[in-house]
Amino acid sequence: MKLFGGTFQALETSLDYAMLKNRTISNNIANVDTPGYKAKDVDFKQVFSNALASNMEAKRSHEKHIPFSNDGQAYSIRNRKHTSYNHNGNNVDIDKEMAELAKNQIYYQSLVDRINGKFSSLQTVVKGGS
Image 1 (cartoon, rainbow, N blue to C red):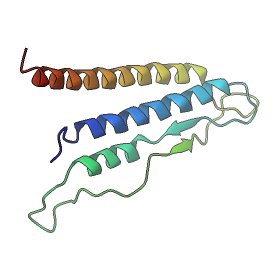
Image 2 (spheres, rainbow, N blue to C red):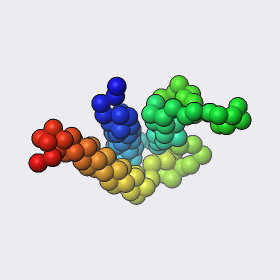
Image 3 (spheres, rainbow, N blue to C red):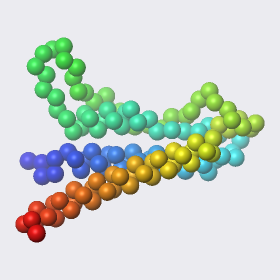
Image 4 (cartoon, helix red, strand yellow):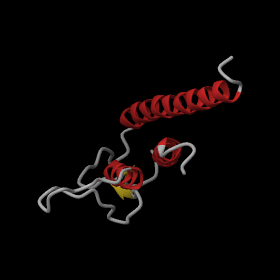
């Protein structure tokens, strides 16, 4: 029996993703003047696929239905290729990085608010609704 369902696991995975993305963006910002540095990004598609596969079990009633499957890969960091913004070969766009950092912080805070709401609901249940 799952006491908390898959919600906490999905939120935990999402927080891990947000933390890795924040670290990656911070690394990009720190290396804005490093010659030849290539900006990195976190691949969200794999994170989303993992979250879906770990929390949902789809029942297939026909062999042509698309199965929910996990490809077994964790999310990854990839280099942004084919871009060059600076004369020294560095492709970090500080304005883009700052916008991504702000977006990621809002995402992270929304996840924290959601977890706090889940714990608040559990606390209400434990106290008998008072």
